[in-house]
Length: 253
Image (cartoon, rainbow, N blue to C red; front, top):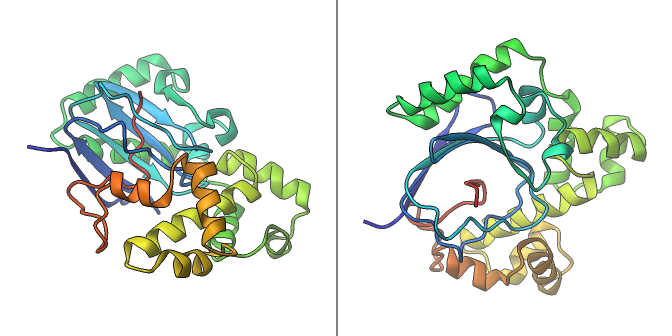
């Protein structure tokens, strides 16, 4: 049986639970999406920070893994660390939380029939003991996702450019300009998977033209749009949910 990826909505606001079984294909890069994940991989608990470029899992990684993918800006308060400290990193959870606590959680998930649901339970329990996410993070992400400029977003949330940049580093791991590029690329990919022609998808997502989208793919994904879609199983009618890996299933090398 080949590799299989599944995801479902989480009770944790805005999050997604996912599970992967089978060998990982190193030709399938994991693209930046502004998210952070709590992962269960090879019997370990890890955190995947926000990526600024494509991440390629190790070719030798095989077997089952699971995660909870947090919406942009929601994980730092839960984890107790600013997002920029985890940018482009995969970090063992016991580097962030007390070792004894992590050992207990590791045992619990190891015995669980549904590791993704167990990760969700950890997140919900932790959220009840920590403060809420930065309330401006969701607004900033929504503004940028709609294609608003950084300047317009700053005005909408009542912050100056420097304040917005500082708050964005803590919440998202990078400044609003980078977050806008990441979200724009994800919008374009979603449109293409839905059957929109490349040029039309580029314009609808906020790129100047198809060439602009191609440059963004090179810069953020390290590949061409066609090459990425082929590697992830796209066949012109949308991704195959049983074989294609969405951008957020971010395991470790």
